[in-house]
Amino acid sequence: MKYLWAYSIPVIGVLGIYLGGFWSVSALLFAFVVIPFLELLLPIDKKNYSQGAVSERLENKFFDVLLYLNVPIVYGVIAFCLYKINQTEVSQTEIIGMTLSLGVILSANGINVAHELGHRKNLFEKVLGKFLLIPSHYTHFFIEHNHGHHLDVSTPEDPSTAKYNQNLYAFWFQTVTGTYKKAWKIQKKLNTIDNRSFFSVKNDMFWYTIIQISYLALIYSFCGLKGFLFVLFAGIVGFLLLETINYVEHYGLKRNQLASGRYERVSEKHSWNSNHVLGRIILYELTRHSDHHYKSQKKYQILEYHDISPQMPYGYPTSIILSFFPPLWFAVMNKRIPEEMK
Image (cartoon, rainbow, N blue to C red; front, side, top):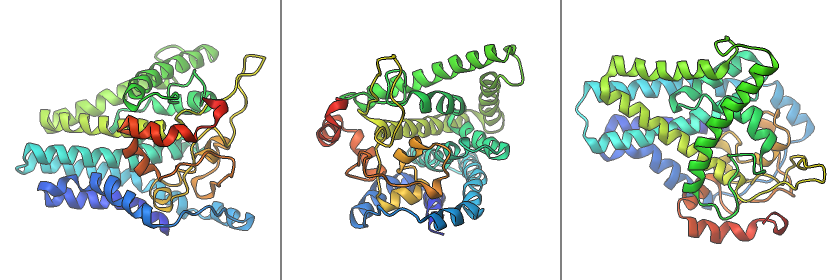
C-alpha cells in the first residue's frame, strides 16, 4: 500500500491547479522542496526482501495495477489542465505554474512508469508504457532505452551517461539529440535485419513520429494555440526532468574496455543507488537503479540493494536540485566516483 504515495504528486498537482494562483506550482514545490526536506528526516532503508517475500510480491497483481492506473491519471490531469486554460481566466503566471506542475507529473507518473512497463514482456503493458511516453514527446525512448542504453550504459557510446565533470546543461544537449539519433539508428538496423520497408507496420520510429504529430495536432484542433503551447512546453519539462534523472543515475561511472575492444559486463557498480525511502516509493524504486541495470527484467517491487553499488548521499529529488548547480554537484559527487573510473 505504501506505493499509493506515488500518486501524491498528481493529487497535489491537480489540487494546486484547481486552486489557481500561486498554488498552480504545487507539484513542483512538493517534488523538489517538501520531499527533499522529508528525506533528510526519514531513515535510509537498506533492507532486502526474503525469498519468500519476493515470491509473494511477484504473485501480487496489485503492484501491476498501481502502474496501470497512471495512464488514466496522466491523461486525466492533461484534460483537466486544458479545460481550465480554455474555459476559465488564467494569468500567464498561472499557466507557467501549471506547465511546470504538469511537467513534473509527466516525468514522475508518465515517463518513469513507462520505463518500468517498457521492460515487461506482456504486450498490454508495453502498449500502456508507450501511451505514457506520448505526452512528453518521447516515444523514441522506448526503442533507445531498451535496445541502446541498457547495452551501452557507462560507455562513450551511450548518450544517456554523463561524463566525469560534464555539467547538466551540456548533458541535456548530448542526451536529447543523441538518444533521438540513436533511436533511428537502432530502428534502421532492426529494419535491415528483418528486411522491413520504411513504411512497415513494424517500423516503430515511423509510427512514433506519426503518433507524436497527431497528438499535438489533435490538441491544437480542439484547444487552439494556447492549449498546443501548453502541452508542448509541459512535455519538454517532462523529458528534461527524465534526462536530469539519467544524469544523476550514471554520472561519471564507466565500464572498463577489455583487450577484445568490448566493454566489461554491466554490474551493480555502474549506476548510482539511493535507499532514501520517500524517493524510492514515489518513483517506484527507480532509485535502486544499480540492481535495475544489473538485472533489467526485475519488477520494481523486488529490486535490491547491493553493497558494492556507488551510493548517493541524498535521495533522487534532492540530487536533481543539486545537479542544477554544477559547482555544488561536482563538489559533492566527484569525490564519490571510484578512482579507477575517473
